[in-house]
Length: 330
Image 1 (cartoon, one colour):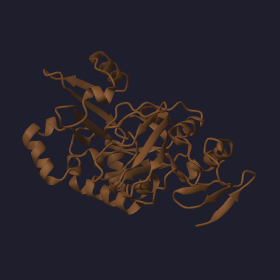
Image 2 (cartoon, one colour):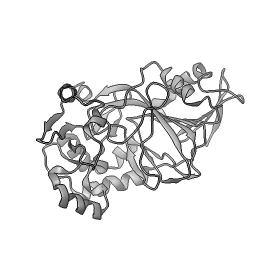
Image 3 (tube, rainbow, N blue to C red):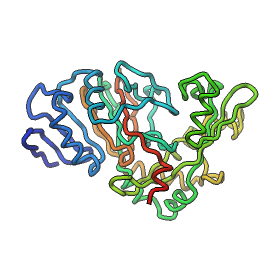
Image 4 (cartoon, rainbow, N blue to C red):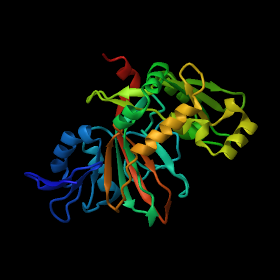
């Protein structure tokens, strides 16, 4: 790797993936050094996709929130989420996915299962785990290039349809996902975003949404692999759990599943290829307490490794993008 100084602010930048930025003097905080850092981000984020700010003095979640918000876009609420999270001190700051420590989370682009997602995402390591707990990343442009062209074409032309059933003790409730207990507010949210929603006689909800399988970055014009097919598909679960769910609720009642946009099933070979390419592209680096990782969410996917000991990583997101607008823009 190559280490160089940025003038006039004397920030140290180490090339690689992720790009690493270090303070030029001890004791500097991210919030205090924002004006120096803005230039680094604006010049390099769209080229590199991922920047790790390391060895800056920590000023806690509040300082992290100020740093993320300073880039000029209001921080987003976690709406239509697919995993359990909790809001923490600081507007627009949430815990990372609250899954058990022994579980890994596959590589994915945030909210790529819908047609509205954040362009930018920040992770703040308030406390690194005793072991494990890394947040691996992968270049979504490289994933796109490595996927078989015939499969890329199918995902582009057919698109994908995500089906979700909420509650029943199997997944998040619709109240958690939509942050309301009013049917009318859920229906309004879905109508505005092209999500089909149906209530059953027990008051439970099922949604269907047809969205992109690949996408073109609005500024760089790079094509990226941008979906969560491998994560939402039933085959992401271990065989025993697959059998239990199918026996209990049947395919129509699965908490989540994904199909091609025309409703036809995804091929096992396609899902195996996708997972294989993601594994090939994965880059793992250790967290240090106080680190901040900033991603262009379209250019870079992220995941989580299992861990032991206490781990605290919080997240902020900004700059909402509408996928339907991208698809219809020349």
